[in-house]
Image (cartoon, rainbow, N blue to C red; front, side, top):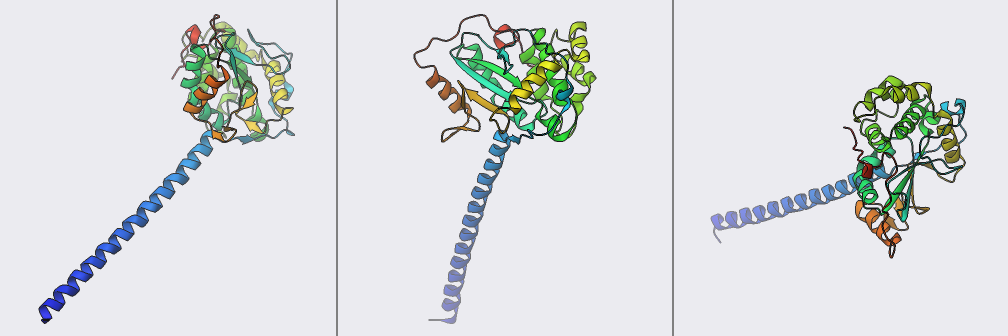
Length: 282
């Protein structure tokens, strides 16, 4: 074999080897990207379904609250709640949450449309239990002040819209911006018809502070480890139900399974629910 042919064969083998090395590198990079995406997905899911550990031994601003004045239509007795949706809906979604809790905002902002859809169809009625966990963990009064303002919005028949607005505009967890009643009143302007003298007075006077404290006491004495805690007909579904992780598809499926053979609710929606015409301000 001539020197020229040997050089040509060697060059071909080298090119082939280089091509194989490039393919290996691409495959390695592809695997890294797949693993990285999986890790990001897990972290993202953890953020969505993250639970803020409860500090059940601490005190917060709700400990100083006054008399118990329930907002319009409140239910729950020793576990106070604000109901939304058609009251005769066959399934009940109980949501324990804190307006300063970032995981609560992530849950609400991700599942809000689905919950509203289920409420409007009469499949589910929601019961919102308001907690002041972050006030107890980090100090401040934003959880209490926001919860009182949300209860004031319930009095005005605007709970759903204002509740959603608070989560859409939620400040950083360490920023106790909701401790400022002026900020809460400012956000009320995003909900048509809510910013009235009656609402402002209710917010500034802390009319429902005692009721919020009662709700938070129920949370602190419960078996829940943090917020959000979400139950469907008394069974925990957050961050998962059994072995199934919560998702839009699974939430709809679980509600359908719970309602099998039952008629959807048709009664007039509770004040402030989506079916009553409320819309979240942005």
